Amino acid sequence: MKIKLSFIILLNLIVFNQSFSDEMFNLGKEIFLNQGNCATCHSLKDADAVANVGPNLNEIRPDVGRVINSVTNGIGVMPAMLGILSDKEIKAVAYYVSEASMN
Image (cartoon, rainbow, N blue to C red; front, side, top):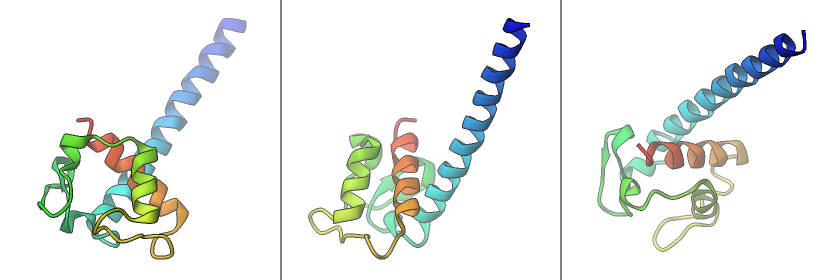
């Protein structure tokens, strides 16, 4: 009984975590391509973005924290998106860039 219960809990965690991850990934991709205008300046293979103004994200492979900081506060010529994107949207695009750039 204990093993069966543990298996069910583990299976639920995997299924629900994957579903949440897919939703965040898809939302982040949508933001990257549209309201975030990220594809205008950055290259990212998953998004079919080939711009050369900002860093190539496939090459630098930024982690989530680095992307959140850059998107929130801006960096170099990149403008701050705080107030343009919600916290949820910033986290989603950061998750997307971090995950997509690893592939």
